[in-house]
Image (tube, rainbow, N blue to C red):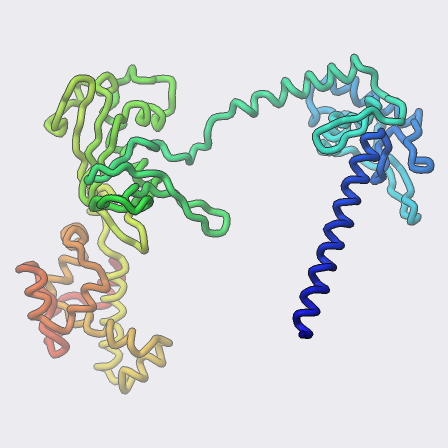
Length: 427
């Protein structure tokens, strides 16, 4: 019963707070509708007397000068730099608590508030409405209108700014190899947004997705731009950025696990660029294929051009092999007595150490293939797969289908291996 009584009392207390807040908001709105000033920092140009705004003539002349000078200069930044030279400073006032606020330079932000404040026209603002106030106006109608017109003209170009440059280029034009449209989706981490093209079969839960369920939007856009840019005719949308030229030329992109099938507007294609890659030409469309290599660094597919993949080996696998060889040398030289001591000295998990050590006994031909990079990368083997099958030669041979094998276990003679840890690390 005690908890029930407490909950009831808390509910009534919350209700009272909400009712009080609503009454205060209603009172504030009603008072402003009557033209009353409801407190706060007194605006430059007025003094407060018994909760009424009284015109301060010296400050009122400063306000009129600010408005006139803004019309002459046409820039808030230029006005903020000019006012100190003219001796125009902010308001010097003392609060009811006795705290003195001294005059100082008027910042551009404060100037923007002053120039847009309807209180200088004798009005009181509340939310998006204004009401006739009980105080006198400082700025006449003609000057006020001139300032507001100038402010609107300066702010207008901001509404015509182009879309953000990191917006996906190919929205509505991407399909997977099962015929499903790929819609844009995104996730957030901290302040960064990561965009992806995701198959509608995955998003809607209907139908069967293709061989590629999700792909990074930025990387796919770049892959398409790289593949299409060299094919565009010089006259095609020549005044636009090359990304926009590509987006205008692309009719459709079909994405699969190992290729891109891109359909272009025939008018956008340079006749000299047409080659056997153009696998179809129908009416006003030209279609060609672009081979890609896919990597899965974590949980999303990343497209890598075939040439870029061939440029470097798998650095994670190379570093793992070099580390395993160093550990094996430590054990064989007697620097550490056991794998347990090795794991403690290297500050590693014992399970991780045991899993990585067999990499020290890989066959030389397989090490050559790993260091060469492209052939091994295309095979699709990664560190996890190599470690999983390293101790068992028969399993690896059966899985690889005759491709280069891992070495014959931990008892392999490492003296015939021409690669040492320094060579591997240097590469």
